[in-house]
Image (cartoon, rainbow, N blue to C red; front, side, top):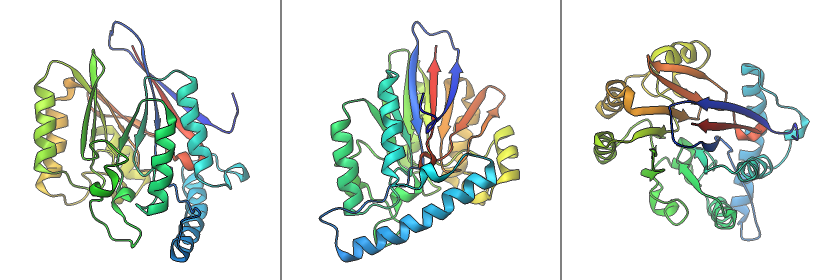
Length: 282
């Protein structure tokens, strides 16, 4: 395989009737300009591109990931190569665990809408904190602008017969009463769940390890949190046997640790430098 991509492989054995395969990408931080971009759009694009050209190297240096001159390119390049890999391996779905877009700008929305419409492969898109920033750097829920692109951006449940994948937007370090009620309803069902979020849960061995190497900013539940945050953490801890795994992003590196005695949480290094996770569930 082309060594441009860095593929982490995870196998989860839970006694299913057949094997399922998924591919996770996170933190692509796509910023584009096109023929419809205004001068202000172009200036914003330059600023954000320069920022991530620096930050992706800093993250890689800090965590020991690979980032060299091959990734001095538009962020769409590694993103599209990873997405193609998901198709090539015959995955059941591409899982996008947040910050695929760097901001919710018109040019970025045009790009991702065009790409996903032409992708011809199942995908699950979980929003990240950067999909809560508009082009004016206002942080807010951008659901109205994202809904033409992303189905059910706040909460999505996909039934695979033997289990479900549930995507929950926690990108602004909070969840709503409606989201919590939907998750509670899913947990009452007879199928186990793969939970996809953007900000990883600061619990158990994962929280201890991550807390030693990164700022509390990157962890959900490590700061003084509102009640809804604590309720989400409690829902996961008190229903650990109902979950198969938790997939998250945000931290820009790969961490694989338990968040309870029976439940693993997985993050993956940024797609900006060609990282993705192949997940086999059998």
